[in-house]
Image (cartoon, rainbow, N blue to C red; front, side):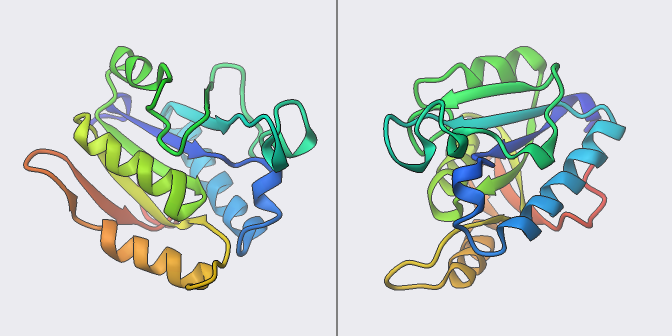
Length: 177
């Protein structure tokens, strides 16, 4: 697959989430490394930004902003969403199809919410997905630790899909593109 047929999708790497998730700064460093590799190889990058009317992702607040360490360039698309599924009620699918994208490299926050939902939905829409196992994170909940959640999703989503489109996993240190 050519570099033109794939894209990196950074989900909800926003100030209001980075400070709350397990190893947020470490995960951001890994995401930044993936972005560096993608830019070197001219792989398109899309940022998914959650818009909320309240809370730590309230539109216009410091928490809503994309984390500055990722240094988005002007030619990199930002998709605004209001649901866990980045495809729901957004132009994401149309943009990916217009770009000729077939594979998405997914990273970001929160693992069991937007990362999981968007990755699974991508396969049903006809995209292949590579989940970057060490470049997504979440928070502890009442049942599982953040580490257990990310480990579970890395295991569960690896080889998840349908007859034609799959999720596979890779590390940020792997040769991704």
